[in-house]
Length: 131
Image (cartoon, rainbow, N blue to C red; front, top):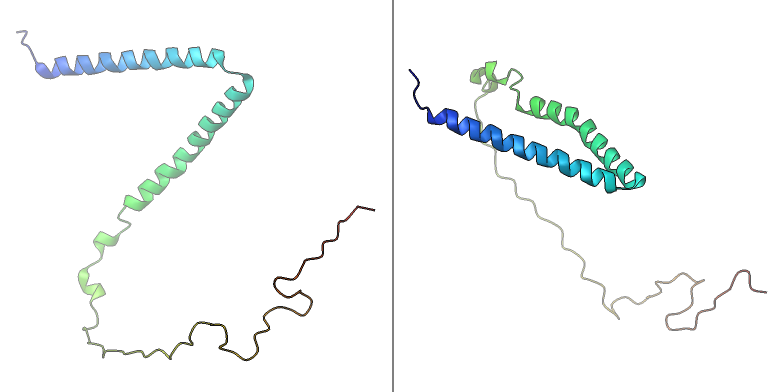
């Protein structure tokens, strides 16, 4: 008996669409590859090799982060060996902060090293190599 199965029709259409996309991608790659210079092709190959080199590490990290690593085998009682004891509240008092610097606040306002000219004074430049 030969009956119509809609899932087989969907599978055939999906496979045909994948085949058309694959042929299109290969054709596009061949056309673009023939038009690229050697330097551009080397950059593309290097980028693809770099991406391919990161795939095993990425897969290993994904596997390692999703594994249970035996945590499900531990019983909850192992974590609850001590009863909960409430802690007293801790109040921290910060010392008062000094006010921001304002002109006239300190008697000695010499912030520049003695070798530096006063602000607003003309600067002296030495040109190296000019004789």
